Amino acid sequence: MKLFTKAVLTLSLAASLSLANVCAFAAEEAPAAAAQSGTAGIISHIEKALVEVGKSDFSAAQIHLKAARNSSEAIAGSSEAAKKAHASLMQGQIQSKAGNVAKATEELTKTIELYKAL
Image (cartoon, rainbow, N blue to C red; front, side, top):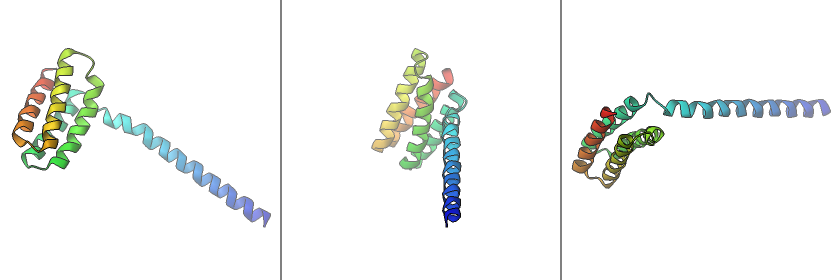
């Protein structure tokens, strides 16, 4: 009985440690995936959001805008133009959340031009 208890305890400990390793690797890869290739990744997400806003699919647009905004925050402090582009992206996201297709499209188009100029 002691042998059985020790074996169960050892197996449960090994299983819990292996699961902790898997979680640690998953957590390490997330920031690397979020930091895409600078402005190209941001522009890509904004263009996808612009298509979704045109279809009035605001929930899908919010996913792309959130990803663009997360990437944008990494470079927002580097210059005045980057700060202006980031602020324009936030306004586009606000207009998209409000369901205003025309203003969101206008703001996101302006944002794309600002990021292309960087």
